Figure 1 (cartoon, rainbow, N blue to C red):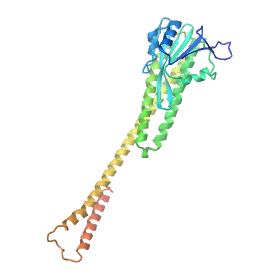
Figure 2 (figure 1 turned 90 degrees about the horizontal axis):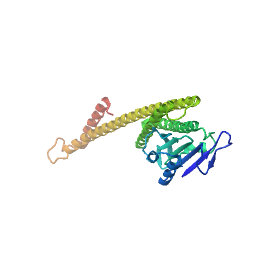
Figure 3 (figure 1 turned 180 degrees about the horizontal axis):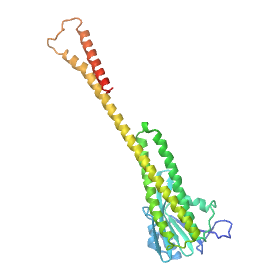
Figure 4 (figure 1 turned 180 degrees about the vertical axis):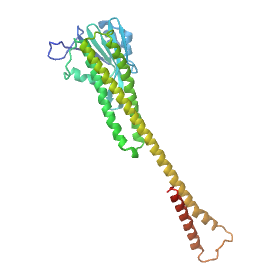
Length: 307
């Protein structure tokens, strides 16, 4: 689906228009092959690069061909049926347009298209910066959510179970995916700062620099949270191993203590002549011996802190 947005500094609000014109923002969501060919023809773009935007595993990068700048990046998305992940988005800045292509809905664009955030499509560089700001802010929100979830599970460290461990693995996957997306995006922003890929004004340069700083903070926070998760997992593994050792130790002690009466009763169960066999108090004596032997065993194990 292709949508055309347009607004100048004289317009009161962002509006949708039916076709391409100078200063338009074109957004293509899950475009078909025919729609991509239409965009390539109307905007004079490289079809092979547009097709790369259809690759879910496309990595952030920057290219410039025939007067248009192609900026690949990734944005976070949430799905009730999937874990939070990142998806690719292509931002093309041409001489008289801005084009965005995504293979999934971009929830971050709702604030832009609904008028909550003021933008002018005729200001191409500022529109590009505004889009990148929205994506960075969404990473920051996801990071805050992950941090809360990690600290919530960390409180239950002594009672951690399989579900918590699975969640920690999921957190690590999300954070690694976030770092893998933001780092190369920041490298591409550094290249843009040089002014060789699109026209950069002095105030735009300041905004891009702030954007880079925000991205660096996202990466640093994500790496710090990854270390926290690894520390929690290591502590949980140590606790689980210690609990397992204690259980094995307890079972071993019980086995030894139960073996003592079993051995004594087995001896006196043999069909041979035994001491006190004719004594009417033989049963009581055997029980007394068993109790004493077990008591000595309990004392010994407690003395060595096995119980």
